[in-house]
Length: 56
Image 1 (cartoon, rainbow, N blue to C red):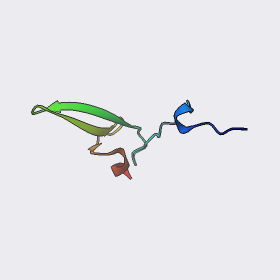
Image 2 (image 1 turned 90 degrees about the vertical axis):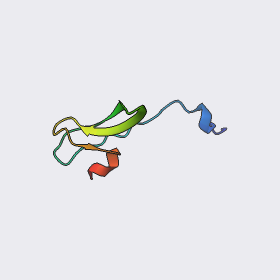
Image 3 (image 1 turned 90 degrees about the horizontal axis):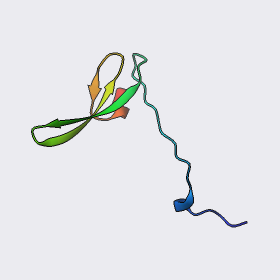
């Protein structure tokens, strides 16, 4: 049986991040001073960080 190439795989997983308060972390895109800025924000406590992994 032949192996499937990495480009032919159709399943993908998304990683969910959670804040220490228990809320889910979502990515937000802001347009500020002519630049696009990506921020991770907790839905429950409204805490913002640069990356979702900074909530640990």
